[in-house]
Length: 135
Ligand code: ZN
Image (tube, rainbow, N blue to C red):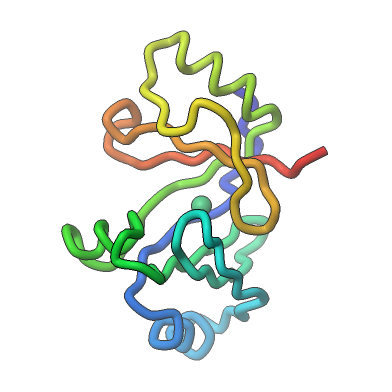
């Protein structure tokens, strides 16, 4: 593992349009990007707080894991993402230590990052994402 910082916090919301004004008008942050990640059936909105980002996740399909999360637990913090140099190596390392993986290999996430998720059953209840900028 080679974690450098918290890359972002993923927050599940029902609607970007209804949520963005809170972050912009109350917290004074600026949404700098809205991106659809078809793979995960979500639309994302990004804000920067220092070198950490906030990623709002809006489901665009009932099949989206975000839609299911909101249905079960309501809106709120969905996952914690660490910037980690060498995601593939980190996956192999933690799997060898008995951590359950959601992704056996890195895949493409929002902003072109290589990402992979660890299962919350193995991470004290926090859905954990590892991500890195591709070389
Ligand atoms: Zn994320």
